[in-house]
Length: 318
Figure 1 (tube, helix red, strand yellow):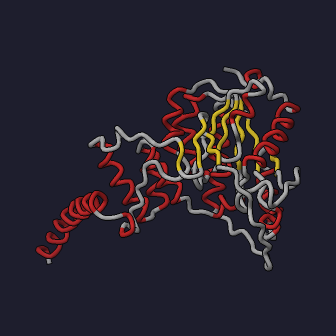
Figure 2: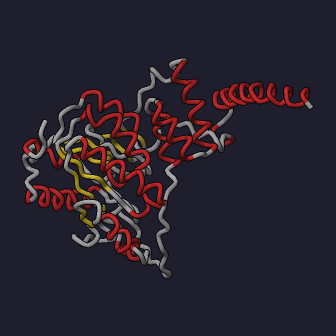
């Protein structure tokens, strides 16, 4: 029995080392199509790599935008610049509060925003956040908070990407990587925005209604974010970027989400504030095209100016 236990104790570290070595070889040598549980994509969809390199030249900004692809495709810094506002968009693909919390811990002091506009959407709060974690692991540093998040998510893809990312970081495999500014129909705009070549959505109607199923971990992370922002004396608002009306009305419990967010801070659901054309102002059911972005950002600016955010540096004690 003692020999058996000793064998088990020896096998565990041996198998762990072998798994790590095989994972690294698999990541370096096998085609992407076969790596179903290893999705390490530096320079992935959404220009997160360019956005994070862009941060190195930014500080003391007026407005920081946070959120998912609806954020980095919805808040155009060029429009806000016309009003003398220096902004940065820290959105990322499928970003949930779990990842937003980590990004704020890393970059809030560096960017030192006077005001934050946080894009929130019911879909974000139904997710486990794994996809966004993979994006950050591949395109940003791996630290204690990221390791803690991987343990919290407890997902094989996150663990694999974390191990593979640590290997690539240690050997500086990606140090010379430079992301293309233009990829397919997307163009990275300094300040974190991604502009989509103008497209128009082929409008779709939904026959049946659906219902959001929320993940409580995301609301817990949002509570942590609010606590962090209050510690830094950084005012914020929540914004829901509009979807097509058909997509929005497909879900029967939108009011439940609105009620949850309104209890946490100032909240503006632009599905209820502006009316956009389903065919003219979207490139898919969830994302505005550039024509829609201009209308949305102009209305948001109007709200911010009324709130006194035209001089946001006066709203925060530095």
